[in-house]
Amino acid sequence: MKEHEGDLKAAGKRFAIVASRFNDFLVEHLERGAEGTLVKLGASSNDISLFHVPGAFEISPVAAWCSRSGKFDAVICLGAVIRGSTPHFDYVAGEAASGIAQVARDSPVPVIFGVLTTDTIDQAIERAGTKAGNKGAEAAMTAVQMSNLYEILRRELGKTP
Ligand code: INI
Image (cartoon, helix red, strand yellow):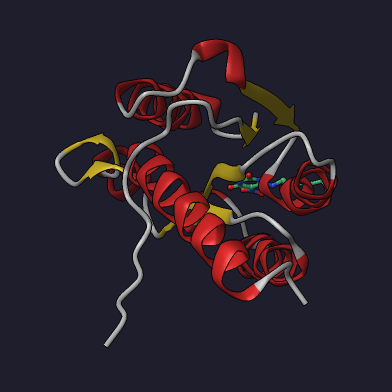
């Protein structure tokens, strides 16, 4: 059996981070977690571009643009949607998730979901670098692994359909 898996080497790769300003006291930690992880895995800071959008609802169109630009090997989407602070949580969180999933399916490069969707601010804080790790750092690891898997897929199977 031939087994294929992307490794965690980021040297020479270019990354776009699309991050929302809403709840930026949390999202900034995700940004730092993502950038730190990419650099730790070998990426150069000069090869990381950060695009800010107002809220999680606005992430997917910008992620789509980045993903089709040919300038990045992966796109990392970061944000925080908290149920406690909005009656339209379900719309914002749902659209962020389904919008990003749609972009990922149509994209020639991996598009990674690093958006926190939690019931409370405390749960979000836990996932932004305290008790439950840093979702931005996890998203960055996933981006590196997937970009290397896409490289294998291109080599083995040709261009994306
Ligand atoms: N955007 C977020 O990223 N997180 C939230 O928790 C949030 N709340 O609470 O409403 C939120 N709303 C703004 C939304 O993403 C759009 O920016 C806005 O609706 C304009 O399109």
